Length: 74
Image 1 (cartoon, rainbow, N blue to C red):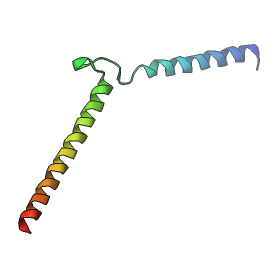
Image 2 (spheres, rainbow, N blue to C red):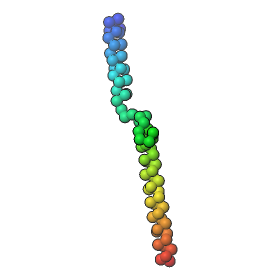
Image 3 (spheres, rainbow, N blue to C red):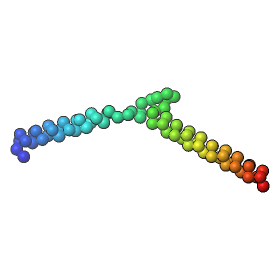
Image 4 (cartoon, rainbow, N blue to C red):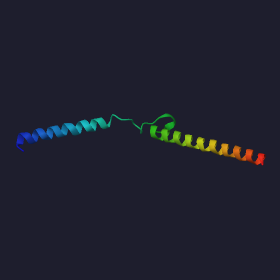
């Protein structure tokens, strides 16, 4: 590579790297504090956990109702 070609290559490489670096800041910010002092990622995880617990409670209530109905019919 000649001197001029090397300089152009390095400038283009630097431009590509800087563009990539600038784009990394364009996504969602899960570390920003939201309501209740938790981050957006933590709030999402808490909501998912609450949904899972609600589903388990509904399944347990359904199973208890089914067992009670089976016991009465026997």
